[in-house]
Image 1: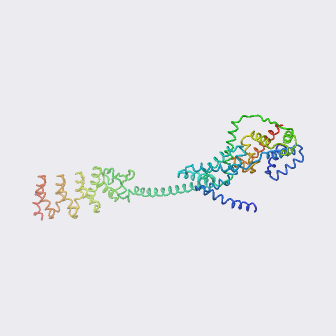
Image 2: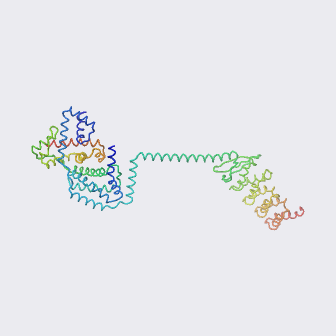
Image 3: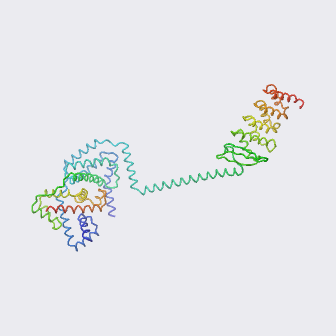
Length: 204
Length: 326
């Protein structure tokens, strides 16, 4: 009963958006601009975090919304517009990550770190217990290490981890966005966490 | 549950996606396994660690810059042309159909059903028509085309009288060549003979048919029907073959006294027929009615102007005999 009610509420909440989509499909630029404003923050946030570059994020934003504008006529309300636009963005990000991965030389991560760092990262390893890293490491250095570890993932693992860990999406939605199943997304997430632990443990 | 499965479930549970039942199983496993609780701690540590690389909100300048760039790009885009819009609509419609396979199947089944029913009905009607047509043709053939209308007969191909017999074979064509056999007294045979006397392209067929009709009339075998007489008069007046005309004239002989129309036809033959033999025969046939005014006028005309001296002479002789006869 509650589920039914919440579904109705969701549908009601989505009604204005659906109207905007229909208008945009009919060729209304104003309606499309409204949709852009509704999702641009999320698109930029995802692209920025994944690519780590404002320039790349801007390019992805541009390309994603141009694609959306060109193909909005093909949107058939089978999924939410949010999922649809995210699917476009994740595909573009995946392309960007793949391009970057082939360009970049595979370099070993060697960082100057203090004993504190060793303690922290050791806690993340397979053998040691965890202690709070925020108090013991410089956040910038830690951020760089994490970014390096993330770059070691395959584009798909990176994307699943990004969407799950940082964007907080459901595995089912992630599966939809990446045109795969929830189970595959779950397995990919597991592999990603395993690799990250190995990468970060190896810094000792 | 083994540790490998437990490790996977620890990840799923850490992100809040493990079903309650599986969560209970995992908890049970954790109480008995010394390794897996450590695995969970390490994963939670990773989660906290990864938060050290937080998601930052995009800078307002970046948003404004991106929006401006997009608007410029959208302004530069040419509007969709009508066929592109049409293509999109078609693609959407097709995709909708794909998304509703049941509807597509139903549509297919209904289409096939309608088509089959229509085809069945069509075939049924056609079969009824064919049967009716056969039914109409077969009795006609069995009873020697008793009801065959002239319009159904394309032409008469040949006529054969059996030697020393009253029987005659008439070969005629309808949609397919057919033949019937019957007595000369048979109305169907007579109808065909009359048709042959007028329509056949073959002089031989006309000659046969007119000859037979004439013979019947001369023999007094029920030639009172005006149709036969008319056919003979037409043959006498218009047939190109003199043999046919001669036979027609012979067939008309018995009626020259009783039927004025026959008499007129014979007089016309006397005046205008190109064959002297026929004109001579006409004079002889008119003998019983030579006293008739119209006959005398024609005989006078022929006696004065006929191309053949013999006919002129014969005409004069007949005219000379007329007062004596009267």
